[in-house]
Image 1 (cartoon, rainbow, N blue to C red):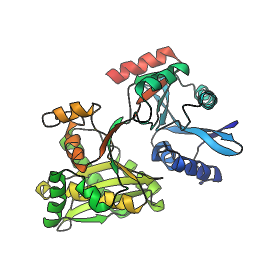
Image 2: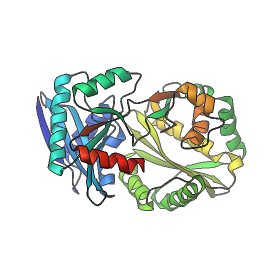
Image 3: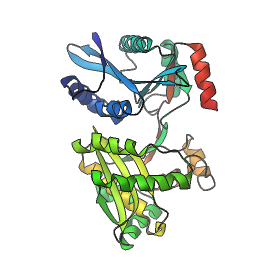
Image 4: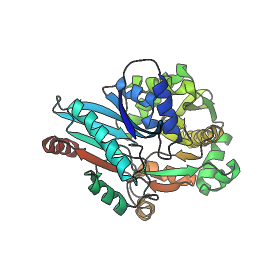
Length: 353
């Protein structure tokens, strides 16, 4: 078994990148957040990236794409592996060798803390098993998350009529209502990014959450859309944009990444029309699942008991997402590899503030 490190930089797409992306696409826990293009996106907005991998008989078998960033005047240097590492967690040798490679990359960067968030569902690995694995490999489990660990995933394998039928009746009604109310959904192009950014500004101000720089969404579109790995859908009434979403497609997974809407004509249910268009597009792309990307981190019983009354955090979006008939799924969450205890304490202090 051999291993390698590869630092990603501003360079043309290489054979190694193509091999890596094919590995990620085929991996059961692979994600668009581990692709070369995702690293390129983050590299343009303050992060550096490095890739480590392992081969067996010449074939890629495990790896991780790591993002690095310095925070708090450079005092906190962190590493982050979104939806990774990609490794057989039941193979102790594989995990040990890959973690050694990750450690080496972290030491090269002077990192005091590395956070990993594998796309590993609790349905496939219990929390007790995950905690035991983390303890064996000196990883701190159940730490603060960056990506939402809890989500709703729609199975796209049935026929479209069956997918629609599995939704709650109110959601089906709103999808059909949007059509009767003359909502038209079209697939956007790069010239429509200003529409998306305008709607995002309205949404951030209305709902009180942070949004990316406008160039971030443009860069994401420019990196992913040409290869068919991202689509932007815009819902309009009388050619006036009312809402827009960006949805990714990579491997067999689709993800609802970003969404925005205006304050006008909300009674026409444009967001429901968008989600239905995105679901159909994802199925056409060959995806078998559609991840609605983030709901409150609570059990299904707690979610169902509180969704009608709670309005904080992600509770508002859960009220809409629960209607699409998906399965509530949670990852094992985040885990930390700590190299400097003082940096870890400073990081926790800043996160708590």
